Image 1 (tube, rainbow, N blue to C red):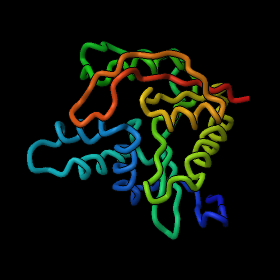
Image 2: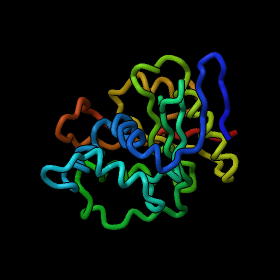
Image 3: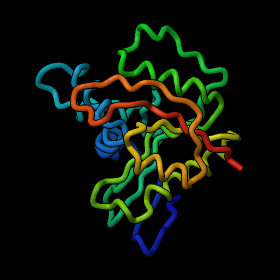
Image 4: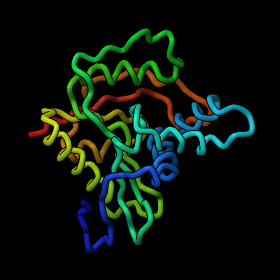
Length: 201
């Protein structure tokens, strides 16, 4: 069921398989280009990495699935997305050495929020930023945490992404841990990844 916000002409609703391409584009924005870099390597030569990513989003299994996503629509078009779900408790990382080095610090930080409702990705298309859609999506995350009985929410942000980090702090998230960021092709950031946690209240 959508929640209408008249002043923005925006609606929040659960994602469907038809949103898969938009989800792929938006999770790549939220993931600072890491998803498309991984998809490019997995898809192989000549295949559109976003086509590969969309196929993953359209699946019913896995963390990056439309079943764990919500979208914000403006004038009938997807303007933003939220991807999230409860983290397992306990959280077993598995053999980190089998992961690409870029991903290891992220998994290490995820493991420090067992049982939290994990905001894996939140993103808004550039043309719709500054309208409060990101805050509305994060409010939806808090509501989902309440529904699932999670006492905390967690999110990971690049320390150099000061705008996003400031938004999360305003919404009650506080720094819990850091890990050094391992650069990937096209990265705009250095420094650390930061795990931020919010008590649900």
